[in-house]
Amino acid sequence: MFPYAIDLENISFSYENHMIINNLSLKVKPGEHIGIVGDSGCGKSTLLKIIAGLYPPDSGTIAIAGAHFPEKIRKQVALVMQGNSLFPLSIRDNITCGHPIADEMVWAACQSASLTKWIAKLPNGLDTNVGERGNQVSGGQAQRIQIARALCKDAPIILLDEPISALDQDTGHSVLDSLGKLTNGKTVVHVTHHQETLDDSDTIYRMEGGSLAYLHKKAAVREENDS
Ligand SMILES: Nc1ncnc2c1ncn2[C@@H]1O[C@H](COP(=O)(O)OP(=O)(O)O)[C@@H](O)[C@H]1O
Ligand SMILES: [Mg+2]
Image 1 (cartoon, helix red, strand yellow):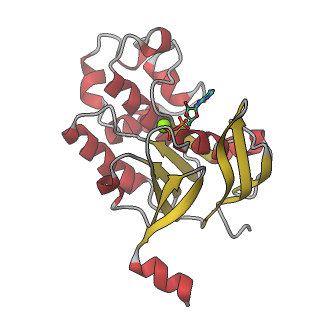
Image 2 (image 1 turned 90 degrees about the horizontal axis):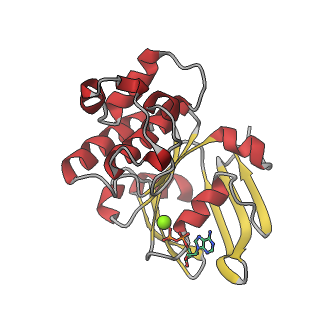
């Protein structure tokens, strides 16, 4: 077994000559929920893509559930990206990513992502095509489809990039509620502009100058770490 679900040691990453991540280290225990806040453009989405195995760091080491290589890392994580990452396929295919997942499980994920009412009204239901880059669905629906995808993947590590930013307040709260229940026992990294949505997080960091500063830790976690 590995002691940390996420173990980043002194990683750096640049887009061309622009350094975004600067000697950043992060350790997250299995089952721990962390939140990351920070100004727009500080590198939060880039950091999640590195943790998800989409971008290799320029330097430093990365171990995700003990995996070091992108193909293995990607199996361990489900990433709900900011913005639209839908394929021009059916709602079902966007949720299952082509894996043979039973309808019951797809509907359960839709329920948790507050999608069922809308899908039930569509003439083709789950077989409705979302269009090129999801242009046949709203931003909020696209975000909820991605959340259902992440729930169906059933990976031990869930990465959420502003998961409710395109949702109205009520839907946002109900999706966060469902996510809270379904991420129980999983490792979660939740990036957000709204620190008040991080009630569920054990530890909160602020991202600044390419690295993470500790902001807040729940008392229970603090005691456990201190003992
Ligand atoms: N694919 C890319 N190519 C070049 N620069 C990028 C790319 N993606 C993001 N950036 C730049 O990197 C910085 C960090 O972006 P990002 O990680 O999206 O920040 P955040 O999610 O905190 O808003 C920004 O200055 C952004 O413009
Ligand atoms: Mg971002």
